[in-house]
Length: 403
Image (tube, rainbow, N blue to C red; front, side):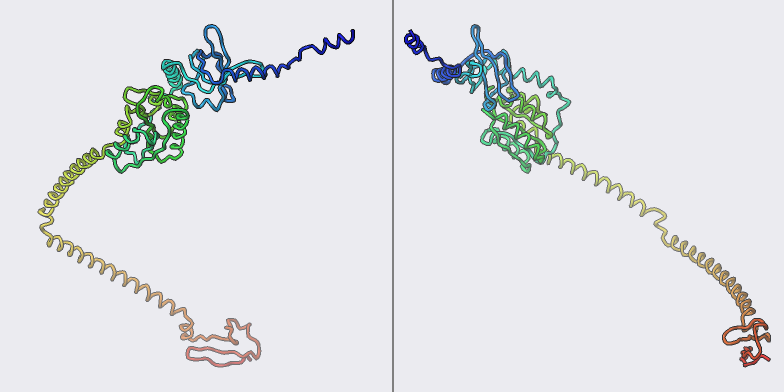
């Protein structure tokens, strides 16, 4: 009996782990389906902080989870939202931790032009609500720019149109070109970065963002939010010249000025040199005429002064001034003589007074100066018996000894 039990246990099937079965399902699905196209409506859309997008594609009777990794989002021509009908291209895979199958989206496009138009209108309403289209925020273009910044394709017809018109209207103007892709994956990012670079450069007086005409898909890079916000953030005035006259993009609404075509943008940004020259010629003619009139007026005034009575009697005026000069000279001489006499009298009086108090004057009156050595003796008590002295008189001096 023990032998039978052992045989039964050996015949039991080998169990698989959850990871094993999930791995086998994952490999089977990925090999079976490969790359497929799936059409459906977006729901439960979430743009994660990591940059990845998670959403569900559904139709009337089924749904499938979907994920689009951050590195692939740059290829999107629009911002996905719940309710949009799209076509997703990718591979079927399994997320092992939950055992859920999902589509790993590589490419996502709206179904028809209607969805692109819906995306266009949604972004337009959003930016309008934020005030990015307000006329009060539009900056005037410089009247006489010296340097134009151009952001467009290096090989497109728009650049050639711009150069042709700028060269015709104002040949001396400087042009700074930042070449970018104007359609396709990554075009919007390149345009936005070019706007930031042009502002960091700071040498352009105005920036023209341009491309030729095309379908809505071709122009979609200029409907991206990143481009609109780069235009709004620009410190330099921006002119949008995208497509033909009937084409409108989000960039047109945000820009400081919309031009119907690239050629029209060049005409709107720079003045016509010939028109400026005509204006300058008119100014020159007007200034010349006014200067001639002014000269004639001054000439008439000078002629009137020359023929006046005052200027026709110069000798009389000279004689009058000569007489006045003589009178002033006489008065000056009289005052000078009087001042000299008074000064001489004062001098003589002072000289007499000084002579009366000088030592020579005192000696002439019979006095003498007594000295002992070099010292002058002014009192008798200062002398002693047998002191030798010198007595100075008017006409000389003698030695004496005190007894």
